[in-house]
Image: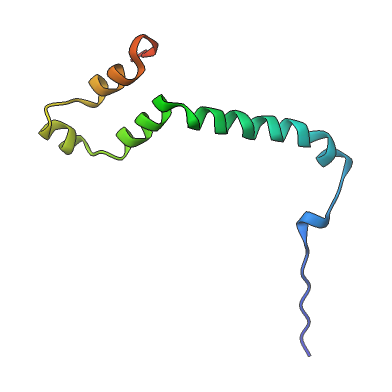
Length: 75
């Protein structure tokens, strides 16, 4: 005879989880805020383009980062 035990981790509650919950929520909110930034979206799109495709268009990755980030670019 075989038996199976399952553990529902969502059901576990501890005081540390309760204390960490607001900080976890703030962290998730900050990540969502950063990902919603148009610059972040453009950088994400750029990261999916190969160097060969950029070279075919006469562009460089560094140049595109400078264009996207403007004065905030520190390369």
